[in-house]
Length: 335
Image (cartoon, rainbow, N blue to C red; front, side, top):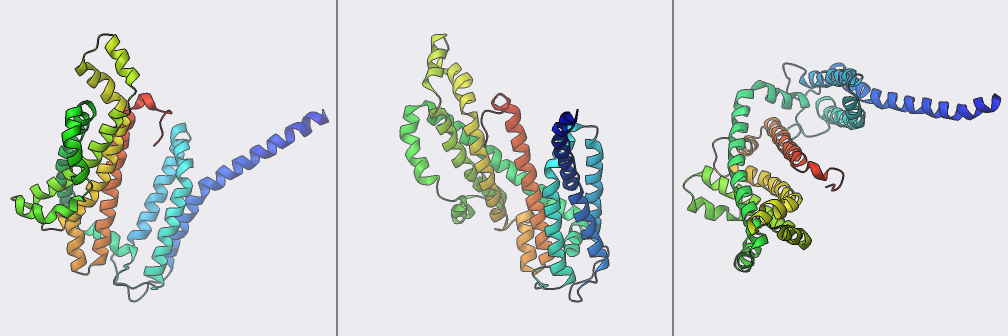
């Protein structure tokens, strides 16, 4: 009997340690958010910082804490939510501590230049003070980005398929792509300003150009790396050339196609922000450049936050589409 108890004791102790570790892992984000909110409300504000009407940073911390607690409560009934919350808890705590440190250095201690490093409350006040105008700028940027990205992806995939299956196209088009494609799309700005009738059409062309090159190269590479045995089996079963392209070559190259789209999407973000600085009347890139010239750095940071959030949502959506289309590769290819 004593041997059975001694054998079970180490397992019980290890289990208790694991539960304690999970508890502290869950508690860390709540403590960090609560401590940051308390510090923001309790500590006096630096006199050089411009006053704000409401404690937006503390409100943001309390809102994020409430959402975290709500997700934790939901996770008790939904295991996938619980696993997700446990996974993101340290990251949430780290981001909260980083924002708290930045708020202390700017709003409370004034150790950073006030002009270039405004308090978090001032940045959040910009987002809360004029949401209609900022949403208008976001809508303009989304329209421009979608137009350029759609045509760039369409032409890039079509060109990649043509290069992958046609030796003649590979012979005539590939040297042109190798010489023109690596040139940054923003280097064509002087020519675009002369060749296109409006800033919108010129900017859309630059975005399409930035998406076209990586999509073309990786689509053609994916088709070229497809095993010949796949086509041989399809031909043995009576498949024609067009069927082999649609049902064998393109599906096999889809991982490379999405990799090209991801690279092109990243390049399109850079091109969009740069193109909007040329003379657009709206847009997030234009807004950031305009506020920088006005020396309103709280507005600059607000625009950068919107750019980061917007691009994060776009990339996340593209990942979701990839996972849905390439569900047959789940657990096989990781990138």
